[in-house]
Each structure stands twice: as C-alpha cells, then as structure tokens.
Image 1 (cartoon, one colour):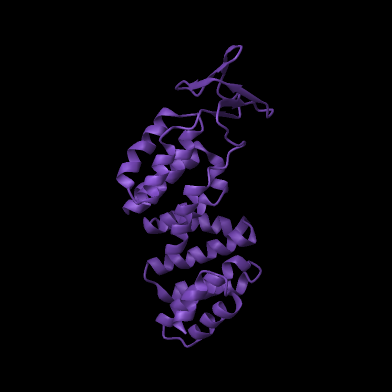
Image 2: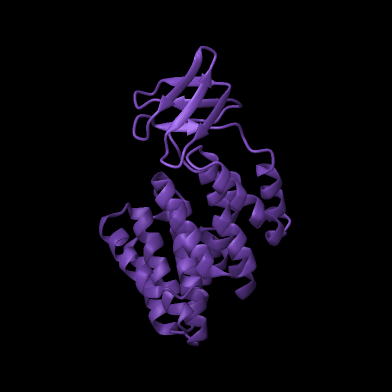
Length: 262
C-alpha cells in the first residue's frame, strides 16, 4: 500500500488534472463548441462569470457559457511543487492555498488543489488529505476519472475510513474495467491488512491472483502481498508466490523485494 501512495503522490506532482484542453502561456477561454478565445487579461467573479480582456475589448462569459477559463500560470506554482519535492510541506501549503483562492474558476485553482493531498500526506495528516481530494473532485470532476482517485482511495485507508472505501470498491469491482476491479480487490486486502486481519487479507489478495489473471499489471502486487500474508501465517506456499513474482514479473518493483524473501 505504501508504494501506491508514494506513486500517487509523485503522479500528482508531474501530471496536471485532466481538463478539456492544454494550457498555454496566455489567458484564454474555451467555448462549449471548442473555440479558443485568447485575451490579454482574465478574471472571474464570485459566481464564476469570466471577464476576458481581448484586443477588441472586454468579453463576459457567464458561468455555464464556457467550457474552460485559464489564466496565466501563477509565478509561485512551480515553487510550490519544488517545495513539496523537497519535503518542505509547511512552506508549500500557504502558497497553494493562496493560488486556490486567487485563481478560483481560472484553472490553476484545480492544479493547486491536485497538489494539496501530497502536502497533507507528507505531513501525516490523512484526514486533511481525504478532504483535499474531495474538494478537488468537487471542483474538477474529471480528476476523479484519472489516476488521482487511486491516491484518494489509498488515503482513505490511511485515514481509517474503511467503510466509505469499502462501498466504493464494491462499485468498482461490479462495474469497472478488469484492471480497476483488480486494483479494487487488492485494496480490499489492504483494508484487512490495515486492520491487522492477516488471513482475510491473504484471501483477498489470492482472489486477485485467481480471478484477475488477465489484469497483468496487478498480478505482481497481488502475488507479492499474498505471499507476505502467507508468510505471516507460516504457510510454506508463500515461497511459491515469491518465486512467481521473481520469475514471471521480474520487471515489476516487487521483484527485488520478492527476491530478498527467497
């Protein structure tokens, strides 16, 4: 579980929230039809209406009449990212909060919100990280469709909000892709593991091994975590699973760990 949390945190540092168009170095508005209208300055009022200054004058786009509005990149956005990479979370936090407030409705609020969970995870405040993810998803619903949602699910475990996560995982397993369903099944095991329930955790990981053979990207993790639980149960089959990780998934990040167990 720790590895996936680290992965999700790093991902948020290098991937911007998925929104309809790419960001360029100028203020602009994208209409619902996909037309891009560039300007020299842009601002938003408290209702979400956008005022764009263009070469021919000012244009107002009422909330609901535009697909996206983007301001110039804040000068200190990259500084905040760098501070997070350096582990200086208390210094990054006020910068990001200021961007969220100052650039509301202007794209960069969502980008700053995408970094806030990393700050709270780094500080060990998992409840605040959960809240930060949920505020991001409320502001930028498309972010929930990407990889960031798996970071959110990991943090729910760290925050011990097991019930909320369990119901969500049930939905993913029932209606998600095979890969997502396999990830969700592994997270079921992670929940049991976090509760200290070794045998139920082993069974959940083994279900992933058996029921999701076609989800190749998740098999190394499922095998390794199942082996760890079996090892705690003093079950000799743990060695067989470690061997599978080494021999069949040698390129995975779990192979080195598995090799050290053999």
